[in-house]
Image (tube, rainbow, N blue to C red; front, side, top):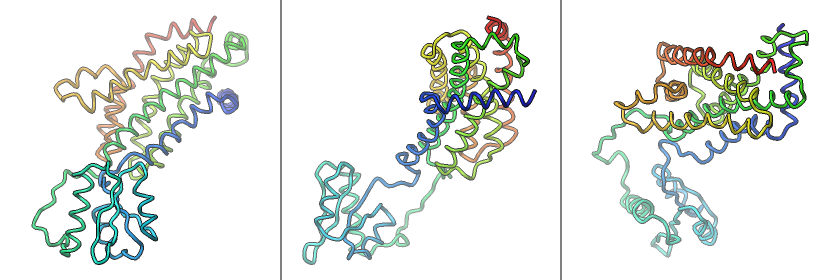
Length: 334
């Protein structure tokens, strides 16, 4: 039976690698992770960028403690850099004095005034040790925006896994091979397991790729794996239902995409809604998965907590399966 399961999985994988839509679904989590890594700011990222001359590296070294600094050979290169679309100002010499070179559309207080203060502090030789202020933080070392985006993308990769299952089943229906399993030397159970493998592996591989690319290498991968496995059962059930009840690819994919509504709602509820109203989202398995993934990415998750989330989602998956099992069996007999 195991050999037949992997034969079905291998066949689906070959077909998906040749189909542009399926191939895009497979590569989408990786492409998204690269984009998030490039554009999502870190928790300590500064909004101020400065351009200075190479000969003023000693001054630039002072600024690097408080801003991002880029070095250029001459004033013309600095001017060319300042007029680009992003917010960056230059600090250039004019005889014995220095002046702030700006494009004119930079935020006044956030960029211009900050650059002036840095220049003044440098002239006065003010050091960090000279301050009497005390820095107090809340222990947040993970970029909050990046953590939220990665948590959401992990949930999306789960839905994409269900979408792949749907595509593969619809493709088989178009070839009139689904009904043939009733006569083939393979059990329905083996066929279902074989079709489900691609839907489980994509979220696992995609999630690992996303957390590694974006720098979340310190997390407990055991907890993450357990949460992803629990979440895939919902997407597998949805993939089979939509694949067996649709006869064309576009309508089947559109049906699976409807899962994104409760997914997005669960993320918004977990992040924005007040604690006293969180119970309104308890019905959604995506809510519990997101809560678990968020705690794992924030390095605050514990095994008892993860097992609780796992149990809740598995319980919901079993209830959904018991409700939809007759429709799945009916679809396989058609």
